[in-house]
Length: 377
Image (tube, rainbow, N blue to C red; front, side, top):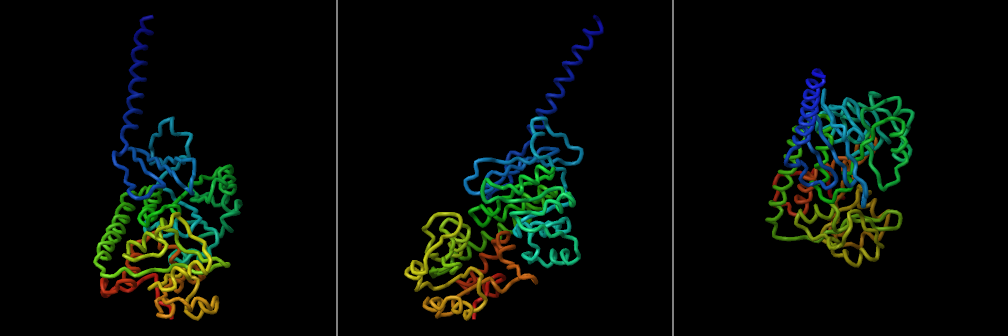
């Protein structure tokens, strides 16, 4: 009886200490979320693990996803163990969009990439060298990723994306025991919001500080260029896009493409529309509104003015075409034909904005040469 009376207080003391430890661990969350612009994810840092929450992986998504990134010897509360748990830093990764690749490069982690769908789309010279050296496996396409190859590779994580709630390929990979994380960078509405997803990858490699520094440089250059653009004495009108399969596609007014044109101090003729993707219009509708536009930023289908008129002779009726004020990013490609703009531009809006300001207000950026865009001849 005496022994029991002695042990009982010790048991309560032990339980109290354990509860106190867990309470302390859960109170060590950073008071300020380092994600400033992106609406689709957040990062909460504890002493031995981080919680990455993806909130908006596709338009009108109703579900959020939590991923627990555990540091070496880290302890995770029981309440979080039902989520996907990943040991960081990761050593191998599969990504499924070319927009993910620049983040790996900027973090000096491109060598951890072991698989990718449609390798021909990759433009990065560093990653193409790894592909040529057979270091990265072909995985087919996003709608039907090669499950057998992925199971054989056993990457630490697969970074996928969904267009809606129906993602049977990714669901099957999870059922096979692979860890799939959703990335919603494409669904961000602002240029800096898209670029900030480098912090998502920084967390996976336990390089949050480095990712924050990289993003801060991009942010500072972007904001500085906005201030430069405000000094312009004119506000040229802009036509964007061109015809694909019978419809003219151009950025919706609340998309990142429209916003970046606005921040270059231009009058994008469809900036009053709503939507985060593209508008789909008839030629007649576009011509009526934009026949006298000062500049034309095409989609990247064409490399010359001749190619444009060969595709549709009516393009020559636009004032911007007649004045040879048509610009495209089509010329800058990887050696297998992937367009660099689609891969890198969402990650480097500072470069895109500088290009546009140089095109629209050349007197403001003396000595700067556009990186993505070229005037069509």
